Length: 241
Image 1: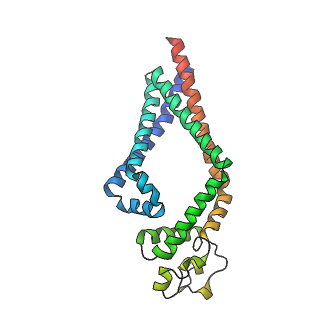
Image 2 (image 1 turned 90 degrees about the vertical axis):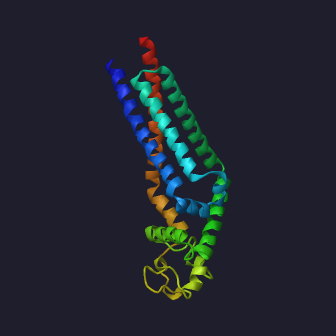
C-alpha cells in the first residue's frame, strides 16, 4: 500500500509541474494573441514560411492546452486511481517519446536537412543585416542583443555590413560590437578577435554541448520514468479490484 501511495505522489508532483507549465504556455499564447504584434512580426521576418503555416498565438494556446490535458490525466488518474486515464497518459507519453527518438534519428541520419536549414538561416541573416538592420527596430534589437551576448559581429563576419543600409546611413561605420565598443566603429578599428555570430554560436554550443545533452537526456529520463510509474500504477490498481 505504501508503494502505491509513493507512486501516486510521484505522478501527482510530476504532472503538477506539467499542469503549471501548460498554464504558463497558455498564458503566453493568450498574450501573443492580445498584445503580441511585435513578436509575430519578428517571427515573420525571421522565417516567413511559418506565418503562412501557423499562427504563433494559436500554436502556444494549443500546446498549453495539450500540457494541461496531460497534467490533468496524470494527476486525476493517480489520485482517483482511474486505469483508463493512466493508460491514456501512458500512450500519449509513449507517442511523444517515439516521435522524439525518430526526430533525433532523422537529424543524425540526414545531414543534408541541417545543411538546407543552415543555408536558409544564412540567406535570412545576410538579408536582414544588409536591408533591415538599423531600419527595422525589432530586427535591430535582436541582432544587437545577439552580438552583445555572444560578443560577435555580423553572421559570418563584419563584412556582412558592407554596402548595407546601416552602413550607408551611418557614414560607412559598423555596429559597436564589431570594434569592442570603440565609437565610432570604422573598418580600420575592427577588432580581429571578434568572430561572426555563426562561429561564435558554434563555440558556445561546443562549450555548452554537455549541458544541452544533459537536459535532453533528463527530459527523456523523466518521460521514461513517467511511463514506468503510470504503467505500474495501472497494474497495481487493477490487481486491487
